[in-house]
Length: 430
Image (tube, rainbow, N blue to C red; front, side, top):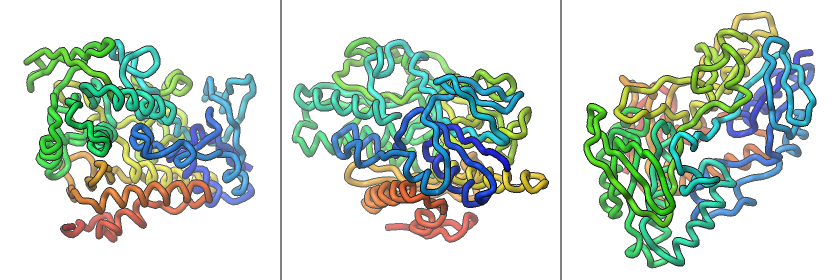
C-alpha cells in the first residue's frame, strides 16, 4: 500500500484528493494536511469585502466530505518536510510518512517586501484570504460612513492581477448603489507595464477593453508603479518609464486601499534544499515532478513558472483555475503510472481561462498557451460573464462539498464559451 500525502486543501488540494482517491482505489491511502479546518472558495473574496457574501456562503468544514470519500484529514500546519526520509513534521510535534507527496500549499503573501503593506501591521487591505477579506469588509464599511480617496492595485512582484481589477470594479459598483461614488476618488496603481497586461503580456484586446472600463468608471491609473512605501493614509509610488527609470513620483492619499502583494513559497516548502527556486516556488518538470525528489509533485500557485517577459517593475505569471486543475489531473495519472511501475507521461495544460466579475458586468479571457505566441487568444466582456462567475462559484462549492472530481473548467466554462476542444477558437459572443 502506498501513502499519498497532500499538503494544502485549496482548489488544487481538495480536487487532487478526490481525483487521487478515485484513481488509486482503496488499496492506497490518501491524507490531506491543512492548517485550517475549512475549505475556502478564494475567488469569492472580493464579494466578501463589499458585503455581497458571508463566510458561511463561501467556506465549509473540510473533514466531513473527505471522510465520506475515505480520505484522511489532518488539521495541522506542516512545519518541516524531511524530503530525504519521506516525512512531514507537523506543528503539534507529530509526523507523517509518505510514499508520494503532493504540494498544493498556495503562496506565502510577501507583504513585507513593501514597507507598510498588508492588513497586519500595515495600512492596506487584501482579498487573498477569507480572513483578510473580512478585514477589508470592515474597512470598507468605515469608508462608506466617511467617504474619501481609494487606491486599488498590485504591489511590485505581484502575479495575481485579476482580483485587483475585480475588486476595483466591484467596489465602484457598490459605491454607486450606496449613492456615494461621487465622494470617492479612485486610483488603480499597478506593477503591470500597461492596463490589461495581467502578467500574461495582455490577452487579445485586454488593454483597450480594461482601459475603457476604468475610464468609463472614472478610475485613474498608474502603471509601471513601483510602490516604495505606505504610511497611514498615504502611498508613495515611483512611476517608471519603459527603461525602468523614474518618470514621476506620486504621493497618493487614501482612506481605503486594497493592494495585491507579491507571492513567495511557504516556509516549510521553501526550506527544503533543492526543492525550490530562490523565491520558494517548487521546481517541477513537464510531468509536475520535482527534479531532485521524484516522489514529490506540485501544482498551483506554489510551482515555479517564469515570467512571460521582463518588465520595468517585476511582474509574475498567474496560475489560473483551469491550469491548476489540469496540473492536478496530470499528477494523479502520473502517480498511478509510477505505482504501476511505469514512467510518468501526463502533462498539465499551460492555458489560462478566467472569468472576472466587474460588479454589474464581467470579462472572460482564454489564452492557449498562456505564454505568447498563442494558438488561441480570446477576450470578451458582457453581463453573461457576471452571471457565469456566480454560477461557477455555486457549482464549484457544490463540487467540493460532494467530492466530485470532474474538471469543471473544461466541461462547463469552455463549452459555455463555445470551445469543445482546446485547439478550437471560441465564436464571437455578443
